Length: 245
Image (cartoon, rainbow, N blue to C red; front, side, top):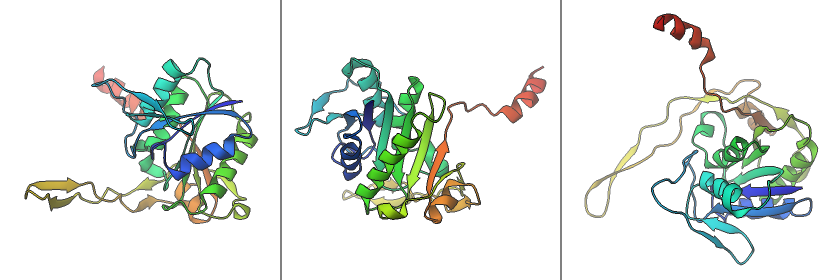
């Protein structure tokens, strides 16, 4: 089995190192990740400048671009074969509900899916890397158990609670929850007295009921949500067609 690994926290992040170590015994792996933290990059590609690729002493490749850049460059330039699976993460903190739209972790997996390759995005349910090696071992279990289960290709968003491995024994299928509107930006001054703005924190959970990723993780369960790319608002399609007629 051949697995391409990427992330959005950068090639030095504990999460991607733990994930690579966990998957190496079961697969031929290659790691292509951003040179620095690119959290929140979503599915952006760098079209205004060329990209460079370098190789670290541990064999990881790092790119001065976004998570989507990394997977795109890997699949179209670096690799002379087609990976069996694209895996992203493990992210420092959750990617649930509306946050998946902004997530670079999910975006890296999505790029693989757009090329017709099964892809999985892994995140931890809380920030701080606690039990990251346990999460990586659990991620390996998920790859081994479910890689062949679903029709290919698929795109899965997985959130793993920050718990010891022996407590990661509940895995549930979920839908994305919803958040309230984000908090306002935080206005400040730079050292020259100019106005600057920090993006504010995300809104509180709006839909965290039974069956959502928020609900599963709050109960210590690993959440797996199947994602799709089609953004068509199908329930409005007929109404729009009538309005245009």
